Image 1 (spheres, rainbow, N blue to C red):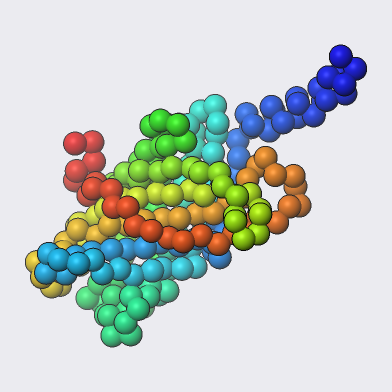
Image 2 (cartoon, one colour):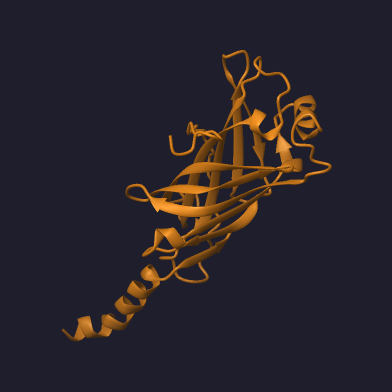
Length: 216
């Protein structure tokens, strides 16, 4: 009993921390966006975008009060081919010189199973906005290289690029673009001051929801 009483304050602090809203600034280093599409209906091509910033607010007791905000600098797009990368940044597609950022802002977050969520929100590219749904999952893992514990927020969706006035080369290059977002965050169960940086491998898991299809 004395031992339990000595641990009680710590248990109360941990319980309060677990129930409290969690606020994260998205770190650009372990965060990435991957775009993937089909060419001639066959194999996938993809491009990476780094330098992502934003904010993630989680509320363990009220998922509806959670919020996700992501800013994507399209000037950082890398299709692993200099010509293709330049074309994606050009006025034919993202028009990076005039519109340097794409943004996603959530309007509602709904629990969809253990550590899984549906994130409803708006994707803004150039001057065009459309509703999208992210299929999201929050995973707590140990980095095998550093031994550090971190949370990883995975989110998948898909858009029809024609909805954002990017119609060049359709149908040879697919209209549907799969989007995968990976955000690495410090685990709130780790004591303050513990390093939380971690590297992770990004893989694509397309989620077939396009503008105009939400809720179907």
